[in-house]
Length: 279
Image (cartoon, rainbow, N blue to C red; front, side):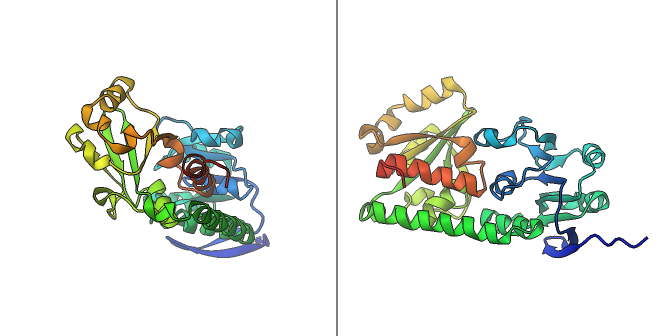
């Protein structure tokens, strides 16, 4: 019997795949933020290692079934759910053959570029125009933010610090929030202006956290260790600490989002703390 289901051909990290024009049962293996931003509610998706979806997406994930963690999807569950399209990143390249036997599968390049992930998923879902509109709106927000900051943009050096579990960590240009800070045009402390994601640092390196504004990324931290860090004399000596320019933000957004909903939330925080108004 000839299958007459209308399809589109999508080129992706693993080759070319024929996908249905109007998929109804989508499964997502990473990149959930972007899928939800396109107005698509998948039937199932992978989660973080703690078996939870990112907290900032709570209002959008009700009813989505959990099918393992990012990088370790449960193939039995996926098969049982009978998807008509599987979307993910090529961190699951080794599972591609198995996944593509279950349903047409599109894996975007795992190149730390959430905008390209959004575009690739949109292509597979037939939502390219919507994706471009979302990106244009985001770009306009960045332009508006730059205008509101004025001369303060070039005068403000931004530091990204995370106290995670038992470690102090500095986030650099290839981190999610670091890439947004760079896109806006803020400068970074020399030690943080590196083409990498992050570095764990010892207490002795607290001076490398210096900046005109410090975004303190919190969530999942050991509270006693956090107090140890922020009570340390080297932390107290930082000019931003003394000037009350340390701003607490959420790690699920600033570190883990990797999508346009999260990117807009980062911009919201920057407007709140550095412009002190919505933008």
